Length: 365
Image (tube, rainbow, N blue to C red; front, side, top):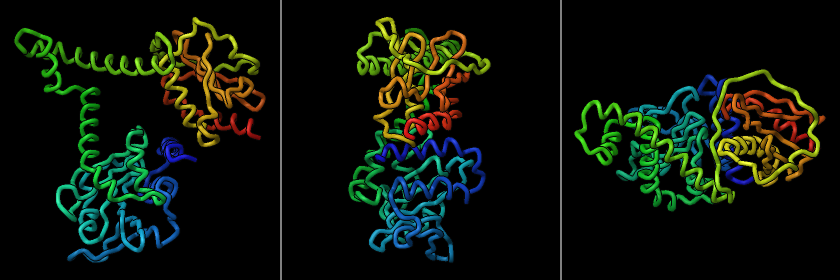
């Protein structure tokens, strides 16, 4: 399995098990140890590679422990401190990392709750851990541009010099992207004024600010949608990819067995952005069973099909997103009988992950 696929599989595991994890110890066992072993490639059961409860006396602090130390050639290279998955990460959680960073050879420190990983180094002062991370990995929203840098920390291609050299740019580019994303989600007064004064010729009064608060938010969302649409249209060679609305839930419906289907494609078919996003979720779930290139999609006038090996006799799921009132996810049993489940948001596809994997397992068997 490729690096990105392993990361996607771990992200899905975190998504599915998050609610069941209530303690720091459970977070370590369920999320952090798999990250160290399957993503970074270190043997968590080999004390020459990974030392749990690593101890180093720090000044007057005696016997303090840090959750994990990763070693290479007998030297500590990476320190990892864990918090329980239900807690958001704060710099106050990193006090032990600060102390240990100064007394070991480690150049990389990681603070994590199992879902979000903050990576630190010593850009601001030698042998002193920075207060701001140079890389933030969120398994709930993976930034694929970070994967090459994360790969450099893995056992097989460990390249500390390259990571440290790129850390400053990563730090500020990442911080800027998060700041911009925050403004798109909830524009600040400064952001609103910045744009309003460039398009509105009158005085910037309280009334104008209130008016442009919603206008800036609306324009920002439309701009992002148009940018994504343009990229999809280029990739798909289509002229229009309208975004379909969401709606309320209804009862699940069981339909007839999947037969030849998927053959009624014609020039009137419109592939929507929402269908493609749903396909990516189904594909991410399927990657735990098969290689991603085996999972393909075919659009038709009545539904959007996700297939194994581009074979219409091997349906994995169907996205019924063309209706105006309700969206449905269609999943299949061993007899290829489709059951349609109403969904109000794309995230609800994850609730049917077992059925999606079960369909694939049936074809592989």
